[in-house]
Amino acid sequence: QVHLVESGGGLVQPGGSLRLSCAASGFTFSRYAMSWYRQAPGKQRELVAAITSGGSTNYVDDVKGRFTISRDNAKNTVYLQMNSLKPDDTAVYYCNANYYTIRDYWGQGAQVTVSS
Image 1 (cartoon, rainbow, N blue to C red):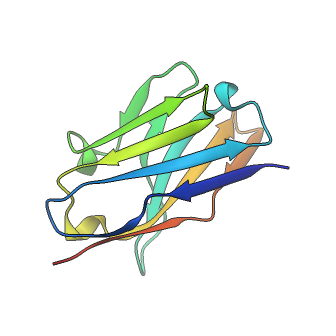
Image 2: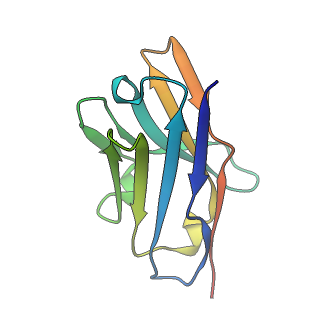
Image 3: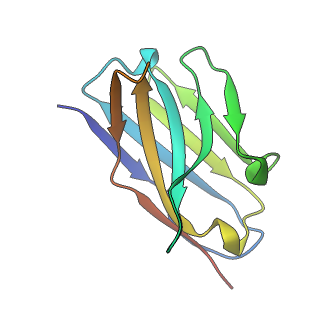
């Protein structure tokens, strides 16, 4: 059974940092592209960052230079390091695992709130 479990969300002040983790099980993690999406209230879910099975990364323009996605295949975990957080980063962050669009899995989401 596939599981993606996000952790590390919470409340942080503007300019602060958080690291999200997504622990995966039930599939061959190293073969999957992993991504982080976010959905703010009243908005569509959007891709934030992605990392391929080979380690190549890409980011939405708004988070470039502030967020870093990484993966540890030995731990079946993908991370999102978020620095210089802004109120506009407030959203529920979702972990996604994708295998050539044949398989697509989602986590339950982690709330990130940036507020003073």
